[in-house]
Image 1 (cartoon, rainbow, N blue to C red):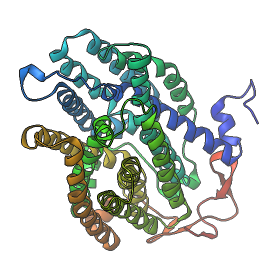
Image 2 (image 1 turned 60 degrees about the horizontal axis):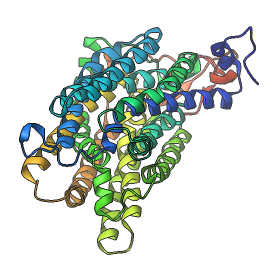
Image 3 (image 1 turned 60 degrees about the vertical axis):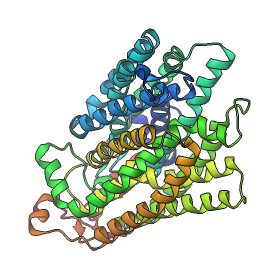
Length: 474
């Protein structure tokens, strides 16, 4: 069933079979964010050996990584406002403008001398951190959000390795310089990004049935953002501390994956090694998180997300113990560590806060909570990289990463379990009840009521009872 010439893609998706519309939306989101990584991560494929920033003991690659994270952290801070307030009709133009700015910064990166490249990569990071929230805005608040967001989230797992492989190929097979390789990599992915963004913009808005089950998502002004933080402060604080270290851990593995694999005995002759490991990681995470869509009760769905995250952190220690005991090889360890890491990391960027908003029916959207976490998280990435460069410079990236794995997996799991306990027991205060959206069609805390006889179209042409009829199980 293809779109007819007299019917736009949006109208076709609204009437198409549910699985077809779902597949197109997920593929477009996956592709758009996959392509974004071609503007963010290809510089990590180069090693910049023998180059140091301003003659200090700080090597140039670490200076570049820290500088880009500074820009990315600033982007997340800006995203708290701009992404949470973005109207649906402004998302696609904003995405295109942000990517154009990032590519121009990579051209500047190629042109500037070594020490000044840190300025270009800082500018490159500023727009890129806001792309995620704009893509999530197209997908959140739907009955199939777990599937859509799991598909989106698998993109950056696979993309990080894939674009580094493309970068390594440009360096080794096409003799492109380390300076110009990032800009060329971005240019290769630009047409596909534009196509995916156009398709994303055709996704129909959430239906009445979506809003009844997952609550209506609306732009958040400063008052709503502050109310959200005040309402969930204790549980959010535990989540943010865990994410501070989780982002640092994830960013360290992503930035120094080349060096870690080299220390494990996997050199440049191992072509597409990142794509091979991250493809399996992405598939595992996609299956685990998409499975959460089977849980209709939003409170239980939220707790299940916590369980997946804590289980991922436990896998980090288990895999590292197996490596130390000689039971698994280095590449298997990197794969298992990647799987555990992303099982904990990905829900923060999608499913966790989508379920939190749905279960509490707080007025607002998941994008703000995601950006609040990222603002804290990327400051952790900066801190850890500076600590390694100046406090632990004598040990290798591999040894530092191993020690980090043990320390974080235990502490992070305890923080997540404490936060899960808080949200499992959370009840709105009188003030908080006034902040939640009206739910006349919902029986507290989770049962939905639907209405009698009339139906509302769901994504892909399905129908669901409208408010006021037979109760619907959640």
